[in-house]
Length: 419
Ligand SMILES: Cc1ncc(COP(=O)(O)O)c(C=O)c1O
Image (tube, rainbow, N blue to C red; front, side, top):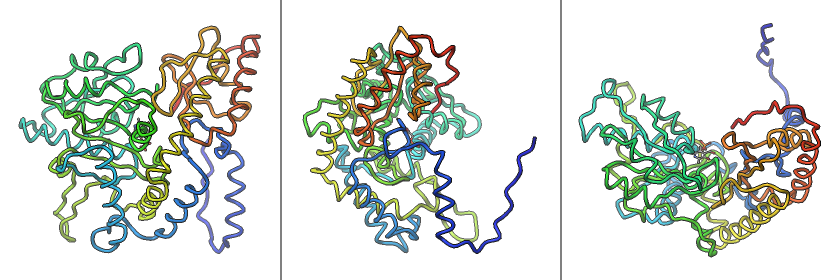
């Protein structure tokens, strides 16, 4: 049966009417405010949430595309944010960054820079010489997207027993057509940081670009380190690291859409740029894939970074790390084991005596959106402070669901791991 198409609205509806309908449309949504979703939303505290929201709407109309010519306020705030990141990630003086709309865009831009560098250096021709990208099995599909768009072959190596990607995994896959190797900080599936020290040595040895995907951990890791929580280093202090992607809209706790990509050398950023001149309006040069970008996102990130600052991020890091420890302890007490020991805020756990997907199915009935990994089969949560309040309830439901599955109340789980 074909779907009945909505006809174009006749118009004239007032705000109260629209708001009522929009509110009623949220009835089927997941209850994110009460920590029922293991991904998609991030939060640290109410004041920061309000600061981000207010700042966004102060600059609701401004377009970050015009940050250099029209909206100097936005251009200036963007500059500040990039400077904060360059310092945080120990970039050399030659380093530079770009504010983007998300991790996938940051990754795309870094991969374009790496591809164009290899082409420039080795004379590989567009459309004729197939190039490749080497990364671990755990790297984010954002790289597959970039590779698909740029006609690059993806080669994935295995993770170690601790779920980290090391040099031995990637070395055999590299050849003279490798545009880059990738390490994650941390990887999304298991929440652990790859062996960036080894990958840096490998990159220098093989003469290839190393990109660190710190979309999840980037803006959080420095504060974990600052509060004495030991987490592996991943940034430009490793000489092989050429670029880093780090999302503000994840653990920077800034409103979406907001990410950053940093390059060790400004000339590499130049390679990531799009430079178009063959049209009537003159030269159009952008360092982003997006053209128009919300000025509000830049303003909101600037405001959140300045609101929290070092002291606020350290406070959040403390709260978040104690919450993660409490979850780890709780799920272990409930008979589960960590698939990998988490470095930051992603936990991935399982048990062997029960079908965890069946447990997830029952949890879903109680309003918990399932986050799952399929190999190995396990629960997966990217946690922020929205998950603090419902911890006891979550753990109680986890035990309840596990017991029910053990008692044979689910025939066969139909649920699948999807992102
Ligand atoms: C490790 C990692 N890299 C990249 C991304 C892509 O980020 P975005 O969804 O902002 O495009 C994600 C998203 O969860 C991620 O976890």
